[in-house]
Amino acid sequence: MSWIEDLKNAFKLRTVIIALGAFALGQIAFQFLILRPNMILAEELESKLEDMTDTYIQLKATDMNKLVDQLDYEVKFIENTAKTALSDALPREQLPFFISKLESGAEKVGLRVTTSVHRSDKPKKDEPSIATITLSLQGAYGEVIAFIGELQKLQTMVIVKNFSIQNRNADDGTVSANVQLVAIITES
Image (cartoon, rainbow, N blue to C red; front, side, top):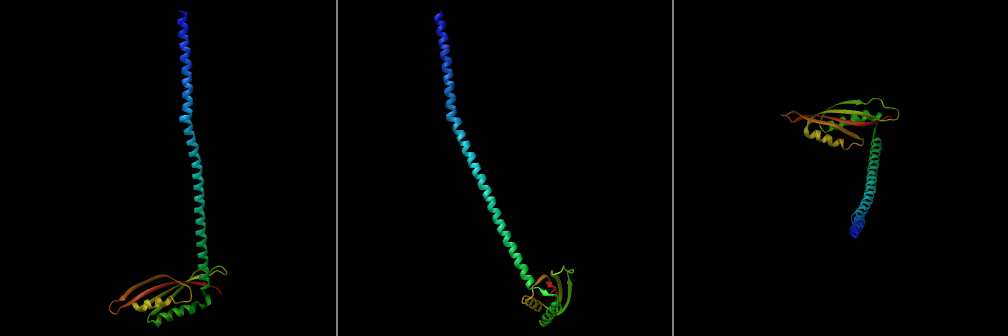
């Protein structure tokens, strides 16, 4: 019976060797067929993620450059507008003449006019100030519109801050209008 036991032991050893070989082949197959392709895919995805991150950073930088360019344009526009406003500003000595010109222009088109002026606080040396000129007008609607058209022809930069018009007398067609103008005043 010893040869039977030897045979059994040989089969056991053979089975263990075959099992170990099958296990090793399975591990090798798993490594090359499943794990390795997934590792390659993971490396490719990581590389693509890095590329996308770089692209995102470049796009953000481009957007920032566009914003800086837009901001530069707007600053230059404001600077040019300020230069134009100051070049067309009204010297302080000419303010009474300018108001007289406004009043005579209103009267010329047939309006009755009263005027009030409010100057901003005294500015620092060499800085312009602001004068708010309020014109109260009475007359026909067409006369008020004609006067507003005359304001557009002024050589001095004046901003219409507020304008209102109300029907004063429906029988004769008269209206009341208030026009608030803002002028930049220079000291010299």
